[in-house]
Length: 318
Image (cartoon, rainbow, N blue to C red; front, side, top):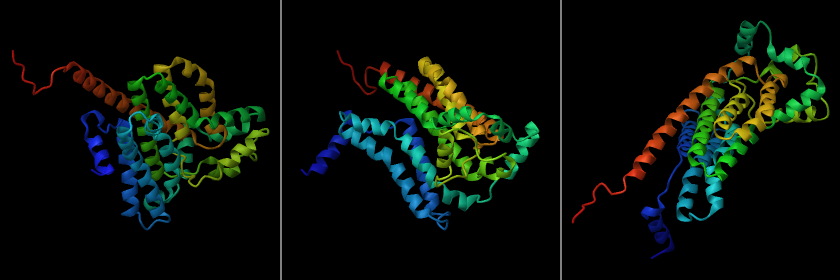
């Protein structure tokens, strides 16, 4: 028997089934749809095929990693990479959105967002906040802003190392749903933010000390910048704060001030309109509700499976 046949039999072994987390299914579905769209109706857009290839790799990641994990269940590195696959998807997938926006909604919506903000508040909030923050505080806020992915990773690692499987699954599912729906919003409501659209309304370049000019320049170089609505930084931070309050108060109190600083930095750093922050609130509530519902269903299913000690088709004879 060939080595490949042996490995196939190992995968079919009932004790080594390929098992997916709920977030794996979300990522596979979202990345597959993006890839199929880029080779189908959006194939004419610039760089559609390279980005389709990128989404295909991201979609295949959970499939391949879970198969390898089932084959070699003792390989911790495989399990770690598979369980935290959301991180590269969120980071890299963001850079593949340009052809989708070009194909479906290339017109910027900054004018409408700025108008909505003026109707809600009577002024441009980012202009007022940015012009009022002293240089030393701007440095602090910009450092907080770059903690976007760090806090999610910290909470995920804490739950993972403490083997709190159900909590870890629900947290990652909420994040996966949030990034999926948030990236979809970028496609249908593209905007570049006040730092570019309202450039003339500010008193000058973004003020700060030594750190701010460097960190601000980094935000001008990403491959995809039409990611203003809704505020992903705000939404992800609120999600982490919510789950940290539920599952790890130590993480919650540690990140509370930096997290609030991150949210303020979205306005002070001129990255978002206040409408972007308002719009992300119902999205956060939605994904939390969905994640909690799926978590309850999974919990009942696991309880039922553990209580069923005798197989359904077992015949008991004296």
